[in-house]
Length: 125
Image (cartoon, rainbow, N blue to C red; front, top):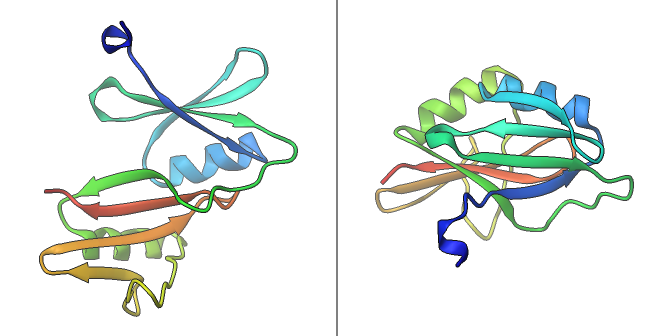
């Protein structure tokens, strides 16, 4: 039944314009759309989308809401750091000075958008 739909994910933000500028800084295609209210559509590879909607009492999730697989986590961390993105430090996940957690060949690094939503870049398998 729902297997034939084009499902998408969504999460809230406290400032659509600030979110738009941030996600554009990441190199993503974004557009503002007026559905019920002003919302942000993030275009992802493969024709997928993520919807960000405004919420005046927004509280960021305590988990990762969006993951970006990349071929080289360290290179991407360096590029995003140069653009002003700050990576999170997690003692329990043993992140290094750049904010990268490595387990064998796998690597992941977490950062937050302006509304505090947690995003990650991880090694594309």
